[in-house]
Image 1 (cartoon, rainbow, N blue to C red):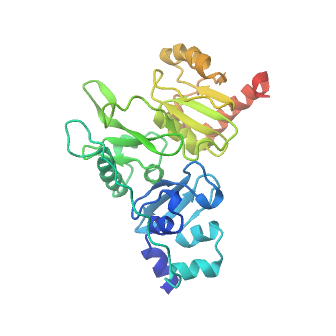
Image 2: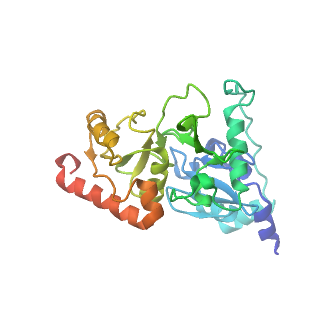
Length: 312
């Protein structure tokens, strides 16, 4: 193995990003979603994650991905500059000092939400296969890791709820099996029902608002290159604020979804898309594949654009 390859495999990519671009929000040793500040990224859309002991990146806005060397090239450095940095031949800035913060504690527990999520993320990364709680959802283990999900010791899913700026505003727990008749709960009480915003939110020409956060994840993976995706916590969850862009509303085809559609339309405007055939977005992605989900959704969006003057 040559020296450059050894350096790439040994480097802490979040630490490197934090040193070179402190405004990115990256923190040493921590996977997550950060800002690609070298291209003026306003909303976090840069995923840093570890696989097989090596750090990688994926820029959700540009589609670029790879290891530390590829990230430096994507950021505009020359090959010689990238090699010099990775081999330690170029001095790097000191790490920015972290601001002291007051940890948010879960009621009834001495552990804060951030710590619990971090432990859950480590547990999911160590899984040899897709956990049962994610089976049938149309989301792979690697994608779940990249999007910051975690796993509890009991096998429940921890889903970080990202705000429009890419910050974690809450953590929603999807129980492997319902507890006291409930499938979902929030890790911290008082979180409200904030919507889930897909990475890189704010950069597309239209917004797809969908019922259910995991459905939104499936749709982000399917059409996130075309539309910003927002997932609402059920039919009665908090809706996003419209920002003047075309909005498309996708709810389940059950009675609750039909009743809520009019209220969503009244509050957000936009066009109501007809429910998907064969279930919700996760079910369609699992049963028929992501490309089928993409085609079905974009066909509905295209029809709305052709038939609604407000979207012309």
